[in-house]
Image 1 (cartoon, protein in one colour):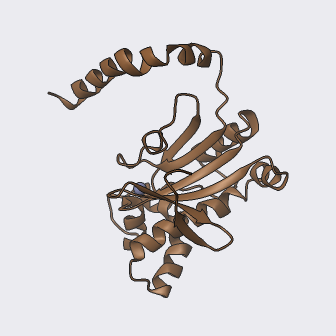
Image 2: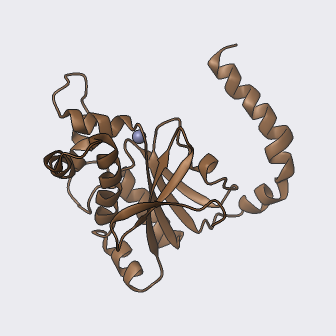
Length: 208
Ligand SMILES: [Zn+2]
């Protein structure tokens, strides 16, 4: 069976299960979306937020990119895909929460740790350059597991960058928007949440 055929068969299951079970929800959603949550995760095929958080259609506005990064607010040249999605989610959809979700065995984080210079990496190097300072700090601290340490630190970098967007900072200060940092461990399927006051990640209870 071709890999694409596997997708079409999945579509068949969606039509007979997922869509049929929730067809009224889909019909309502056709009029418009009001997701209360934005999730920013990694492109990695193993860490689909809809699977991990078991969301229903219309619940989460999801953005995925290499290493779940948010760039800082800037108006210079370039195509700002992340900033555009963020602006739409915050100012038009008025989401109440933004969740940054890092994960274990992240290839983008591995690339950031390995440093720049691979000739076939035209776009990735610049993108993960967002983590240069965090990488240097992690390497200087020489933790036992630099990969894991930078995966966690990357979530903090993205949260800090989120707060450089005026429309995010204003709403957070007004109590209209909450920011959250998470990290997902693939093998154990376990989610950790960042306690920003304490600066570390705690396992999320399964009956939260
Ligand atoms: Zn990743």
